Image (cartoon, helix red, strand yellow):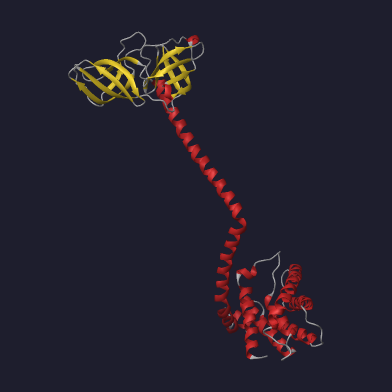
Length: 159
Length: 242
């Protein structure tokens, strides 16, 4: 990744954290809300090496945990693993079109949140799982739309 | 590190750094969100807000009307109390209600008629004084001229130190005229009452107050302008003096 692309990803993560921290980001859309930090991590991982994907996930988890006051250990670990896994799967050669990007993001969201469930169990597991389903769908839709935009920032062929 | 810092009651350095980078922007985003939300609300709920505004204005008008109604009722109650306590001037009082008022003709209709013993020429009084004189009588209703009508002429006197009698007639809705021949000392503010020089109208009924005195030496008369004490308004209940 070039410095400009690193800066682009950092800015995207920062913007996602700002959104997540604001009341606007806490606003529910149809009863759910997207996890934009995870979307940025997955999109970046899809176009980079596994190590960079894991690093992006780690930084994303760190930012999210710090800004939200959540358990940073669980967030950094789950996001790093997801970043690594998505990047690893992307290297197998599947075609990254908006639909597949959306599906992968939705699946990654489910896995990351379930992993988080085990590492930092929430008080109401049922509600957490229901929210996870909604967030996964949102993330899938948002990721498909953002994929085209992020391609201009991160070029996976270079890395 | 996070848990250790929390156990010590403060945030860890990473959290402090990250929040210092994200908090100002998130607050700005919140401000934008509030403004945006307001704009969207105005855009999509403008009609509802307009309807609500119209409803509130109607309520305000209703409250205002209610206050006016209460004030009118209070006036009517006090007028009725005064009417009830006024003297009968040596005559029998027949209670009546004004059922119609024709201001341009200076006439009003009463709810009593010949069946109640009403005859033309009887005085109609309210708590403030003489209101009119009965002109036409039917079986169940009658009509009277207001004292402000130029058609009404009756005996009156200025209740000065030395009473000054004369003839009172209406001129405008707010002014009566009293022509006198006596050279008494009439002043502005003196009360004017009926003189009783007639078989229908008893003496002493308040008519009004002197507002202007115009002497006419060439004819030896004085023209006195009087503000009537009784006028149409909230008055509905009256006495007819029989």
